[in-house]
Image (cartoon, rainbow, N blue to C red; front, side, top):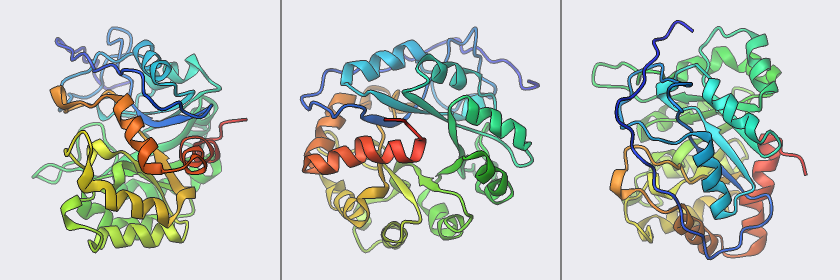
Length: 299
């Protein structure tokens, strides 16, 4: 690994959850969390644009156990770049219950992707977030790398997970959905709730969902700050869910980087989703069946 080893001097302690009122179905899955550290063993590979969380695998597993999530998916954060060491070590703690989303650059050899799959990785994350000079966030791999990687990703059994500002999804998502690999859209595609149901991005998402061409992660705290009820987001959430409940996933986004004191309680987000999902078949589909199908969890 040629990237430098960066050990943060100050760490941010993540908010740990209370116990939700809802009793989740067995094998429920939180499909979007991150682990960081221990930094002496797993140093960052790029400078972080946010306070480094004290969120090693032990603390992450405590969070899952507290809220009653039997399964989880960990997503590689940008400061680790393409170094999957912390991610793979965390997934290996519970190989039957955890999966990972890694980061790899165009030109990565098929054998390397197959090794990631063997370690519990089921997708690669691509982030199209750039600074004013047009440079990608350090440690990120952009959308232009997806097409070159798609054939070898398909061979390795990996999907693409994509995140970027609203405009990038409007520009790229239709094309990405036709690359022959599953595409998972992070954080509800960074929709702007104030634009409502007629927003061009919302209409694009609904069309792609109805055709079964994308998956979508429901992560309300990253799209709206109207906590704790997120009422402004409810119409969009319900329309997306109705468009194709078989392509919906749920993610808390713990440990909530960049949110500081505004970080929500995972339990409160679970209780909110319980109410919004409305019935037990939908809850089972979003929390159990859909993650099992996409990430390859066994019954």
